[in-house]
Length: 360
Image (cartoon, rainbow, N blue to C red; front, side, top):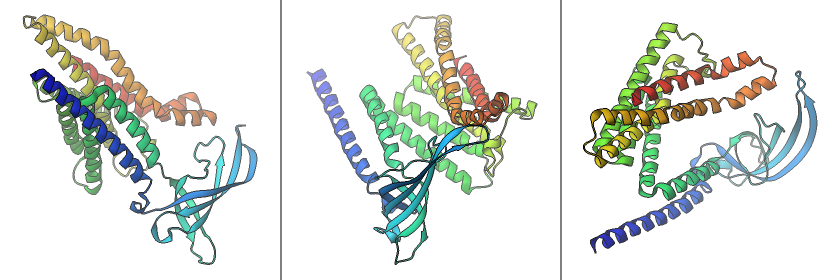
C-alpha cells in the first residue's frame, strides 16, 4: 500500500514537471518574439527583399565566388522609430564566410543613418537577432535531458543554469575589477561549479564528497603542471594572436580557460569513478582495498581514452572554419596549424593530464 502511494506521488511529480516544462516552452517562445523593447539597439523586421546585382568574382588565389547585392525594406520594432520603415543595403558572397543572405521575416539589429522625416529611414546592418534560434536549440537539449534523466535531468538543467550565471557574474566582476587576479576568480568559480553540479545531480552523500575532492585535486594538479611547463618553456610555441584584442595578460586568460575547460571532463571522470567504486562496495562489503583499487584502475583505463578524445575534439572543432579559411587562401599547412591549433592542443593536453591524475 505504501509503495503504491509513493509510486503515485512520483507519477504526479513527473506529470507536474512535464506540464511546467510545456508552460515554460510556450512562455519563453512568446517572450523572445515580443522582447524587442528590452534591447537598446534598434531591431528591424525585413518585409521586402530585392536582389539588384549578382556578379562572379575571383580572388588572387583563383577562388571563385558569387557576389550578390540586396535591397532590403524593414520595419523598426522598438525604440523612438518603432513602426517606421527603414531601407537597408546588404552585400554577401555565396560562400557566406563573413556575411549573410537575408529574407523576409528575418529580424536584424540596425543602426539608423538618416532621420529625414520626409523619406524612409536609411541605415546599416549590425547583426542578426538570433535569440529564438538559440532558444530552440536550448529547449531541444532540455527536453531530451528531461525525457532521459527525468528528475535528475531536471537537476542537471538547474545546475547548468546556476553555473552559467556564476561564470557570467565572475567575468563581469573581473572586468569591473583591476586588483583581483583572473586565476583567483576562476579558482573560486571552479569550487562553486564543482560543488553545485555534483551535489544537485548526485545528492548529498559520500560518493559525491569523494567526487568533489577528486575533481578539485585533479584540477589543482593540472594547474600546477601547466604552470610549471609554461614557466620552464617561457610559453614557447603558444600563439596568442587570437587574443590580440584582449587588454589583459594573454597567459593568464589562457590558464583560466584551461582550468574551466578541463573541469567538465575531470568532474565527469571523478563522479564515474566514485559511483562505480561505491556501488562495488555496496554490493560486496567484503571486497578488499586492493581489489577495489584494481577495479577502479580498470574502469579508469576504459574511460581514459574516450574522455581525452572528447577534450581534443571539443577544442579542435572550434578551429575548423579558420583552418579551412587559411588553407583556401593558400596558407602553408604548418603555418595554418601553428596559428590556429597551438592553444587548443595545449588545452587538450593539459586537460588530459588532469583526467589521468584524477583516475590515478
